[in-house]
Length: 96
Image (cartoon, rainbow, N blue to C red):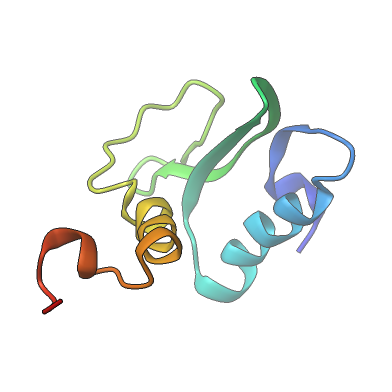
């Protein structure tokens, strides 16, 4: 996979994020995607690449819009588990 798959900003120290982003295209048949990360108020990753519309072949651009459902579950679950020792404990699903 060439580096032209992903375009955008990658701050020093975050190059691995770009590698993993590109790996999604190479190994998981990703068609088009975007990803951004902010650390301590600073944008450290802002990547996009691939195809936004397979029917027309329109490329994914910096301003391509995307609908996202349940986008925070992957971030909140590990945090909840770390703070309570159980993902279900905070929802009252376990006996005390």
